[in-house]
Image (cartoon, rainbow, N blue to C red; front, side, top):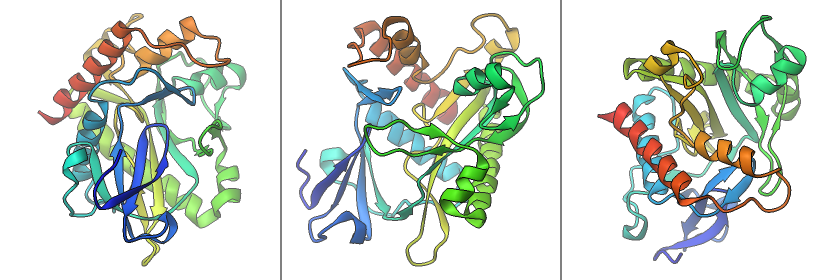
Length: 286
């Protein structure tokens, strides 16, 4: 996409990055335009078709959460976005990115549940015996992942491996900040009748001050699992009914062996996913 005054420099699984035309490269540009597309990814693959309106929904929710977590520095800049991408873009500060996805889990689910069944641990953290899929953990846990380059698989890592990657001080700061934000967000979600089961945060360093700074998306349906609190409390097979792309994951598990190119998503799956994204925003923000 051509955006007057901006030059495209990179496309990730979901987002596209632009820098001002006056800048020569991303590494030296003080600002960038972060555009959320309608692309949807799962199991480290970009799927087809996208989810109509998803970019706007994700941006709206991220902006709302950045405001709720205003006590934590973030990369947003007070600048108007171009009309061509209005509603699905943010002008942000360019940071020195930290190559760790800061995953926090309040409940045992997903890849954490898979590992727990094998070893009783999640990312090397020992958990109590006898837990079931979807159970609440005694305390939220920090379970980082190495953020792999586009086309490669993200990899769950231990805290010790995080220390090896970024140093002990930064690893502790990532952990403590992520847990504090998760607790704050969980309380807000709970007040809306929702459970925040898990999420991931991304951080960079302010190039002038060195401050740890929250960036990318935050607490969206793409980066988080939300459940309805009343449905969860009622128990049964539907208690983990998600407000996210779990619909897409479940369909892929049933219809794809995770080799080769993923199959095209049926129209019904696309529509159901979009409906869940919209419902989450309504529940949280209205």
